[in-house]
Length: 501
Image (cartoon, rainbow, N blue to C red; front, side, top):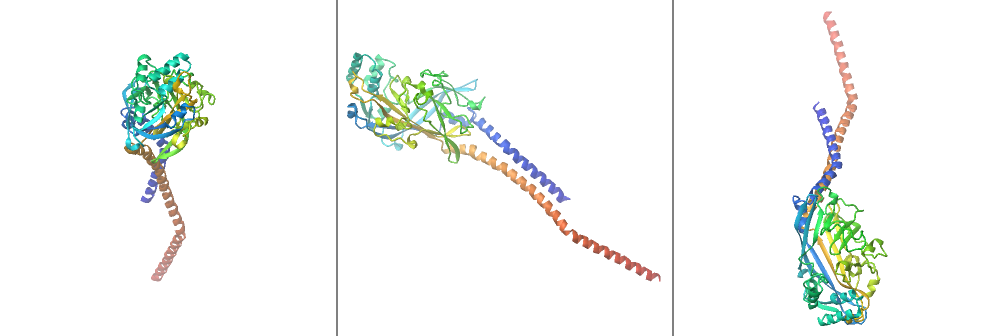
């Protein structure tokens, strides 16, 4: 009786265990997703994700390469430019959000400040290295003013000579990056204010260091996790004004640091870049793994910088030149500056014919972002862009000499960052190990329950088979006992009769 009760009890426990494990199969993913949503919402209460968003405590670097012009005299005579890549010059980038203000409509506004610190140990060379690049103040201004009256162009050329500004600059990396004193710049800022993007020293990145990227207002995801990190407005604008079509003027996606969770291979990575003056969008390329964490790699499609002829939606970014170039003159004081991938990767091959010394490859010059698809958190980022100056001979401005029309690369840079250290460990534990443990547990419950039920059933059938096997012997023994009893009764009966006689 006790064994029967035990068997019934084990059968009930096994059944409940299977049911519990099966329920976890369906409910477990929902629990995990709800936990992800809860932890990702931009809220000071979410310590880890809020810290990652606010201070970006992961290593972030900007790596710079200059194209040193080897034959400036020959270029002025109309020959093809020859360049050699110099660098890398590596800067640690610090990002910090300030003036953080939460709004009742589930958005938050902030100013993101960035500062750069040179890292000699990671660089090949020093900021004191001297390189020769085109002088944007001269060659850029020449193109900007080629349609002015000839007399005005002569006067501009005389101004260049007065301030001893030539067509090429030979200066240190540090001065080219962060600015150098120029009497011409002082003159232009005094008499033609607003012509130059900065009012102090003139440098390629002078306006970037210790500056902010504008006032972003983004969604916190509290009301709808699908909107988290998406830009609501930038500097109070919900759309741009510097491009020609409504589509090109759209501010799409996030601010470029995090994206909404639960991404699929069909998802894209749209983001707004103030430095590029437009929204960009990356597409899925492949799956991957980083330190045990699954990821999706997103890359730039060939259409990203295609011209309007090759890709009609980009017509609004024109006037265009060859595909692979983005004309940013409309947001760079009308200077003939173009952005491309480094070494004209993914650009019209004709651009490589204009300059010697370029060798584009996807590994070294393609940009990518590795995303953890469940959370939308970037694990590894590498954004690579090149700065180019459109140069040509302009009559009346003798500094341009006989320069052939050319898209001249000046430098390219890579902004890269990756999660590591304690943050990577915490990320791996919470978003990889714990979900795996839950998955293993649910199947362990099912297997354990089925094993218990199977064990009880096997014991039951084994006992039943044992009874069937032993039944003939029991019956035989029982029959023999009956015969012995009858025989004993007959003997007693005979003994009784003999006693009476």
